[in-house]
Image (cartoon, rainbow, N blue to C red):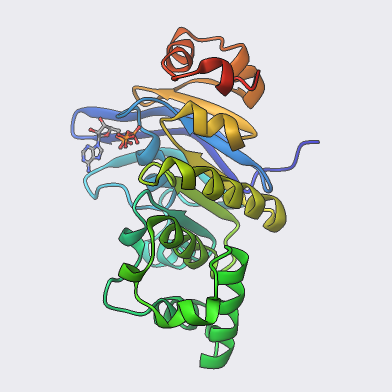
Length: 264
Ligand SMILES: Nc1ncnc2c1ncn2[C@@H]1O[C@H](COP(=O)(O)OP(=O)(O)OP(=O)(O)O)[C@@H](O)[C@H]1O
């Protein structure tokens, strides 16, 4: 079954000064699917994600198309992009503390965000915050609302950052290396959570990671980037088990146990 993509990137290029950072990137993220974006460090994965939410460096020149439903995002005025950010497109970063304020309780961070974007009353925002923390499986949600970021483990903080990203019911979630900073034991549970949310909420998820092992655990399709270009794209099993491009093969061979990653 093919669903029409929530997010469609076509021929996206980005130049900073004389450097071509992205060169004709095309990518579609359908609802309810995890679209993996792989490639070694510096290949342009993060810049692709940042450009989708309009957070590319100010000096960058962007051409091509990024459509959210039937809306074109390239060239959208900053005010309108600001409304989309966090509302229709949300991001989860590698470091959960990047999206959480250290001096504010989890409760006020989640509810302030929703009161601002969704215009909810204080009690409705609190009820929704509790629901979100349950959804991301943070234990004792009512208690968690009163606590501060430093009182949580990295894995729990990433769950809270994911809850915050989901607060305004985005259609698209960009997860940029969401498990890279976490203990190996916690990584799998966060990936399972993201996969479950994608399925349950029909999110179009773009999962950015240099780790094809992570990718093989959850992605439906994989797009491989190198030096700002897409070199390969296809269903996960095809890309991992029958890579067409030497570069993809070298990424797979670099995995500690590439048989395992291939799901064999
Ligand atoms: N603010 C910036 N100004 C200029 N160039 C940048 C900026 N940020 C990133 N770049 C360059 O853009 C290219 C792509 O970087 P990007 O962060 O998208 O790669 P990546 O594939 O996500 O790698 P990593 O996994 O290391 O983040 C790199 O060559 C990088 O040096």
